[in-house]
Length: 120
Image (cartoon, rainbow, N blue to C red):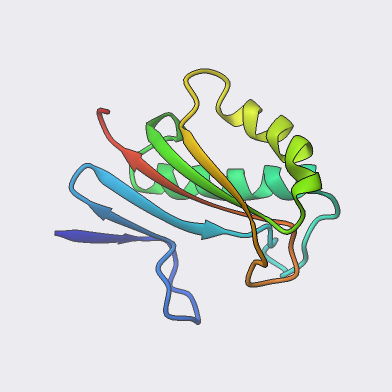
């Protein structure tokens, strides 16, 4: 049985879907509640990971349950700045990760999606 997590969005997208002990977290972008985006890759990555963490917690998971992430960067030159912040959220036993250069849906420098498994 599927369980949908997060507030409904004005687009055909669910922020997170839980199926059994698995949680699929849609790509999060660094938008604040007022729609603004912080300047720089560090603050953007921080906000994205805070949003992923909040969604995971809403479903009864934590970032410690994350087994796979995909990071989308507008510019691969931002990798080290993103990685510095990312490492603070996954200080030990980090999940498997892919990182690709891509245009994200909004005018942001980073988007991150994740898969979590409870009890993994």
